[in-house]
Structures are given as C-alpha cells and as structure tokens.
Length: 101
Image (cartoon, rainbow, N blue to C red; front, top):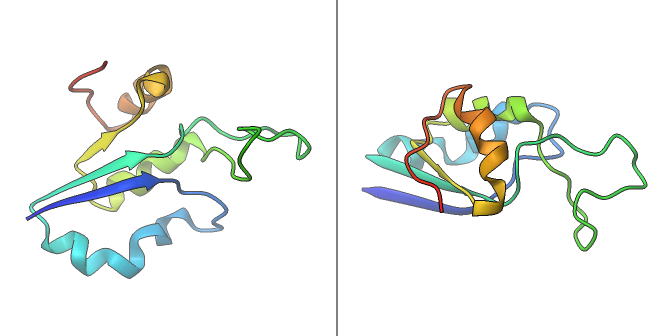
C-alpha cells in the first residue's frame, strides 16, 4: 500500500513527535509513505507581529522537526520547488534528495 499525505505542517506542538500518533497504525500498514510539506522547516519569525506568510495564520515549523517526519516513518517528502534550498539543509539531517524541479 502507498500512503500519500498532502499539505503537512507540523506546528504549534509542544511535542512534535505526537504529530502522527493518532495515525501510527495506518502509517505502519503502508509499504511506502509520502508526505508533501505545506511550508519549509525553516523556523518561524521571532517577532510575533510578523507572520511567516502574510496571508496565512500559521508559522513555519522548526528545522529539527525533520525528525518528526523521519521518526513518523515517512519515506518520501515532497515540497514546492520554492522550498528546495530549505530542503537541502534538511536532507543533510536524514533525507536524501532524489529530484528537484
């Protein structure tokens, strides 16, 4: 079974490792797990008056949350090509890039 997850954004969590806790059984059943990132794991603005993306009310997740994806069993992470430079840093932390557009 191939499992596809879209618009993944791990934010506003005291414990990012709980992001996939409620779907762990489903993730474990899959042969291949693909998650598409909604935004970069680039860290958030330190100024609460400044939004990371002006037209949205969410923030970017922190770079170390790449381990949430890894520990959640995610095999492949996709992202918009505008996030490529952010992903290169993450790839050095445990994911290997396979393509870039």
